[in-house]
Length: 426
Image (tube, rainbow, N blue to C red; front, side):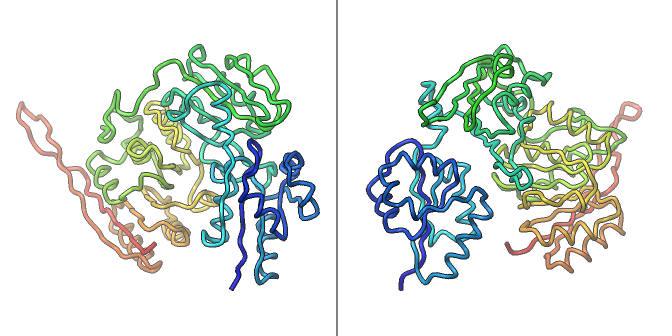
């Protein structure tokens, strides 16, 4: 029995190969944005299939159209034109998420990043790649893993960064963000702006952050930043794990103690990549340790207190942890419209633990760790985790530290902490 197939075909940089051409000819419909429609006009197959092309500029509308087509057809061949490599920060991931891998086929072109590095004649195997392309509809822009304000921190860690831009996060704005940052050595940076790659009016511009900030550029474009100064590597000044309280900026004793922090991170079993929520982050000590251990992990630190937020910001700069995003606000309200977490830590709840757990239970997180210093919080955590289908494990951490009194070492106990681990099947 025939089934519907969705073929995502990348265009823009090289001729369509024989297989892609046959798929296009046999398709019942070809979907494209207005920009890609203009690009496709230059292809050999355009005249033969132009009556099949439907232009849709919104991703959500494209997905809905495909769903409607599938529901109305017993079998169909649908072509979706994409820019370059659809799996490189492109529409490919969204389509697979919506329709599954079985009916989707990807036929990529070169990526714009490949083209950009070839134009400036620099290798790109050692580059850090990010996307600041959030889509043309500002009301429906996808939340990006990194923001334009993260670039100065990233430049302290990487000597070469390539950035996909859009009209809002354009080369001039990127350069302005670099210029306005007190932590960036502007004199060590070279920016390359690769405008309209693959078009007849393609243009490559090289300059300093000051020169690029003062210029205007056409969309689409790729920005490559070379940092001629050796970046600060994780662990060069501090070990990758095991920061002490003396190294971290905090106030009024509001910090997860070293020994408790170590056990907490062990219980979280953090993935190398994914999303981690640190709720009631305080000074951000858990977030800092997690982000340094796993630079590929996206960490969201939630904190409502302004003084504590300032400590997180200071620690974020001090330890070059650009993969931390600080969310100022009170949970659970502050948790909405964010990438779903794989792991969650709750260090502080502001009296709203029940609501926070109920919210998290709807997320894909399979491990939730809660630290409690009172019996009441312990009982509340157990009750609401179990009510939401989590299996519970509890440990109590009692730490004593040596202290010199009258030239002799004595052990002084810290307040015990309950660490509650809730796990559920993913």
